Length: 165
Image (cartoon, rainbow, N blue to C red; front, side):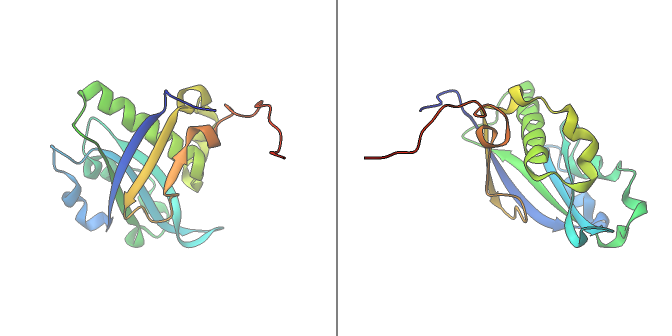
C-alpha cells in the first residue's frame, strides 16, 4: 500500500531555554514554529512534557511570554525547546503558517501533554492524516517521527491479513 500525498515536515529542535532567556527566541527572521515546555506536574511528576504550542505570526519568545499559566506551577524551573521548520527552501508565508499549524496539532495529538488537554477534542483527523513529522536535534521526549497515518483514524478500517506462505 502506497501513500503518495504524504506531507513531510522537518523540525529542528534547540534548547533548553528558560523564561529568563526568551530573548534568545525573538529573531524575526527565523524564530517561528513549535515549542514544548517541560516542568513539574502534580500528577505526572517533575521535568515532564507539559505543553506544546505554536508561534506563527510572532516569534517563539514573544508567544511564550504571553502564556498565562507560567505563574501557577514551578515557573522558575520550566525548560523550553524551540522547533523550527526546515527544508530545501522557505515556503510562502501562508504555507509556512499552515505547516506550523499542522505540526502543532499532530504533535499535540500524538503526545497528549497535560496542559493541552482541552485542545485534543478540537483536532480534526482528516487534516492530519497525510502529515509526517521528523524531529531533529534536541527534541527531548517527543517521538523522533510522528505520522498522521498512525495517530489518526485513516487506517482504522483497513482490511488486512497476516502474511503467510
